[in-house]
Structure formats: structure tokens, C-alpha cells
Length: 106
Image (tube, rainbow, N blue to C red; front, side):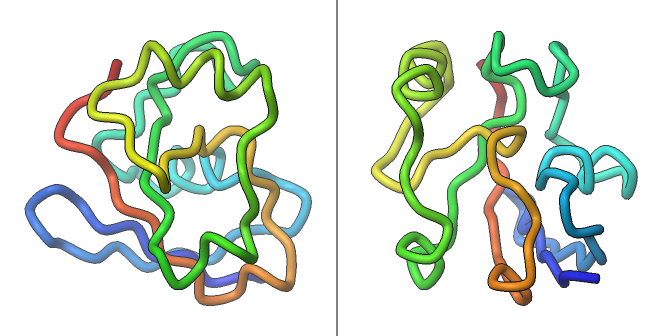
């Protein structure tokens, strides 16, 4: 299992264990993380699973694909560290990952 911490807009930290091969979005949904809506269920056709990757993790997580960048145009308050959590695969290298949930989605 890979430890992922979600930080809510109010500063609450929700620590979860993600199963390798799943996504950061799926892990959030399974653990009831508020603010991750995931209307499209992970198909990268909405921007309701938008997160900010903690700056310490941006190199390891990597950047968005072209398709993901197009969808981020619909997200609220996009930043350099913005990603769609449905596009981040959980893997051993992400153990300890920290992502921040925006104040609102798309």
C-alpha cells in the first residue's frame, strides 16, 4: 500500500492507503475525501478531481498529458502544480505523496 495524504482547503489532513495500480482519485473516493467529486469516474472528461500536488512531489509525480492539460482548462484556480487526480497512478514511488484539494471544483 502507498500512503497518500490529502489536505483539505481548511488544512485537515486525511491520510489514506492507496492500492498500487489504482489512481489518486479512486483512493480519495474510497476514503471519503471531501472535495474530490469525480463526476466522470476517472475518464479524464471533467475537472472535478483537480488537486494541487505538493511541491516536494511534483518531480516524482510528473506533469499532465496533453489531454489532461486540456481538461485543466475547466478547473478552478489552476496552478503550476495542478493535476487531475484520476490521471495519477498510485505506485511505490509515491509513498508519502501529499496533494491539496482546491476550495472548489470546476
